[in-house]
View 1 (spheres, rainbow, N blue to C red):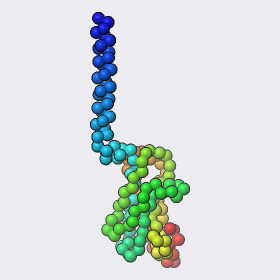
View 2 (view 1 turned 45 degrees about the vertical axis):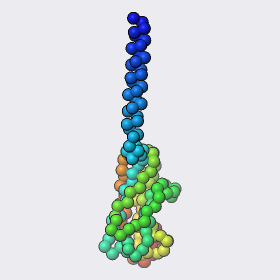
View 3 (view 1 turned 135 degrees about the vertical axis):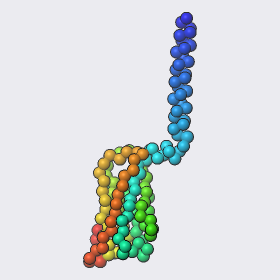
View 4 (view 1 turned 90 degrees about the vertical axis):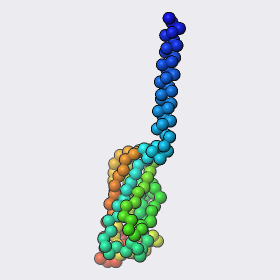
Length: 144
């Protein structure tokens, strides 16, 4: 009788361990899903007025932290594309700033105010920014 209880207990432990192992394997079998759950997504919408020279000038879209360090590779502004997606690994509390700057840095006659979000950023979630270029009356890009 005692042997039967021991064998039953060991069998139960092995069954639970096997279920746990296979459940973890199923969760990471799709690496794209696993990486999506482990990273924060930022979507930057660029809401350009009709006279914005997107085709003539070179502009880069950036996501930085509060110290100005890039948290994801910069992306070039392309005519006709008004939403840009960035990803960053992990969950954390902090500041993220979306900005658009002329590249190479030259006065463009446009001011593009950066957009800041202070929050706890959770992996698997998407956070939205909207950049709106404004014509600068002086012709100098002082806000960049």
